[in-house]
Image 1 (cartoon, rainbow, N blue to C red):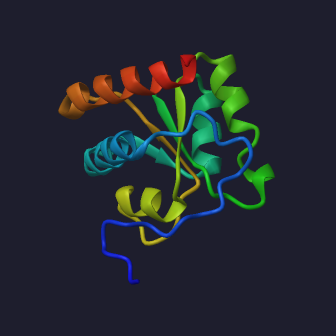
Image 2 (image 1 turned 90 degrees about the vertical axis):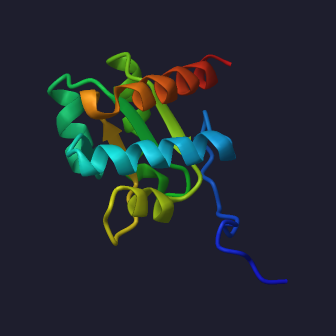
Image 3 (image 1 turned 180 degrees about the vertical axis):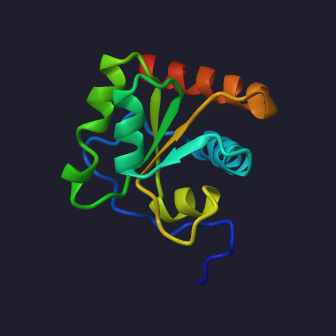
Length: 134
């Protein structure tokens, strides 16, 4: 059996990948990342995101759940919790990189609120917050 384009190969999710977005929310989050990337409203990669978090910038943190070694991203959820920033995991670093309009897989993206996509941002933030409370 071959996979169609919309099916993803199962990836090895790391143990801390919680809360993990379901398929529907993952698609919405990746669309938000793509829109935000076009509007220059994202920080991508561990280094940029950590720098933004240290500067107390707000946003929605989207983390890839298939990062290995896990130590690369294990400090980010703690930083988010300390600063009351909502974070959510998506299954694939490749999909996150593609949505962020780069050719490289991306481990973490911080989407910042901008007027161009405020309705999509608010919807995704609400759903991700509901996931982390559950």
